[in-house]
Length: 211
Image (cartoon, rainbow, N blue to C red; front, side, top):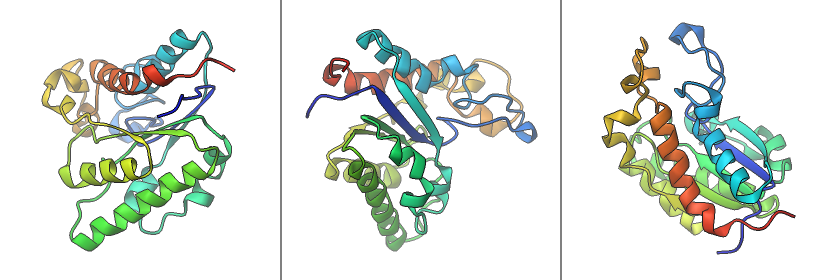
């Protein structure tokens, strides 16, 4: 695998990557749910790691693409991700899967596989970035198998994080009292650090010198 340019990094994810304030569930943050602050979510932890290694702060774009997860069979990446694609990132971190509905059939699995392959292909067409895909924080074999296989077929790097959920200390509910069970089940600061560390380990030996 070649060197990775980290001047511009694109993050595509769901609530674990970015979630704006949502009063109805008691979430006041505008960062990765459920970190205690933006500085402690996995995106910003990883950016700091990369900045420390290169001596230069990357330009980052952070997008929630839960719409893709929920509507993958009809999702048009070219229009929905126009700005992220035009960002022309050297590194793309794809952190999705948790919101994909359970597959009722092999046909649904095939549709998700096709949609995810199209998504990665659209990313590859814009500057041929290094693509890193991580498994679900809440493991699901059917979804994770597809994420892994499609990532590898696209020449990306897959990061298996299935073990993180087995450690209760990685959940936000272990760090502070959170009324909403869904928010509480998201990674807390320790879980976010574990995600960032796993992603860093996947890229640290491949980062190119700043241009």
